[in-house]
Length: 376
Image (cartoon, rainbow, N blue to C red; front, side, top):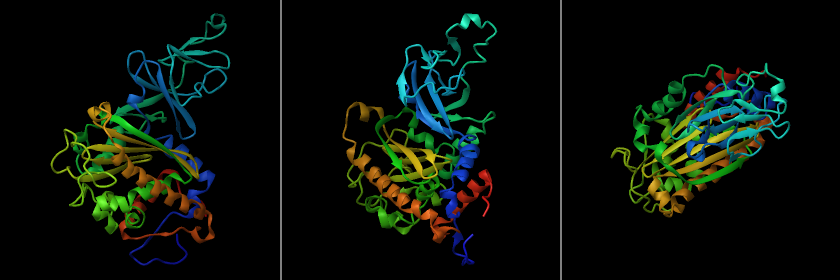
């Protein structure tokens, strides 16, 4: 709560300690990131049997693996013998199995224990029971989503439903054919800010006229302070003189085959809690996923996705990449300017949300519903 009563047009934010307190962050890890569906990797990053990628999910390292049968599986990245981290690399490829460097316990691509020194002297050891700990995995939009919960929540409700709720229909996202697109560019940002500051920033456009000159040139209505996410089903329209979603408004590429006339020349955005931002424009997709590492540090991985022929033909995508890369840098700098002030006595009781930001209040309620209210 703020120190004084607020006029009806304003509502309070979370207090500053929600962005700095390690204990609150630990609760977020255990009650949000470790219980919900979490986007871990692009499926195409794991092209062959033995391809793997590790991802930090809450307090756990999760290993996503392409099996010999072509299917993706996910496991906790922990050897069952003495707890050594199995794969220390972020990504790579093994030929047949994963072997722990400590005592050489060896696991198949299906997670089963297949070898260990003196294993024949332990005939009572169940190789499946002492295999790698399995993690739930679903594929959607060409990404691998994992969930650490014993009983995961409904993927259809929590993940697919979030996009439906924002875009207005269940089929709107299908038009973009995201699962069949190729990664044209990936940029990883190490942001010195709490993950919630990044979510809040993405959800509102009150700041757009101030820090996003290139974006508001392409999407003039954003200068008015209302983000596309403020309206269900709304897509921000390109400016009249704008030919494409590029840094200079120049022409991009042919619209993706399934994009409708109604979706053409419009930008749509959706937040899939807790850590994905989906940005849809007619000729490409910008897909953010966050990896919160500490109360004041979040790694954000951003993919620019194009039709396979655009990427395969090595066409120049630099102008479309540059637009959102600048937006990212501008946003993350703003978040990093806020982070130190979260510890200030001036923000001990929080700040305020103006009318165009009121939907962020719902996000705050969602957070406190998940983790409980912190003591004063």
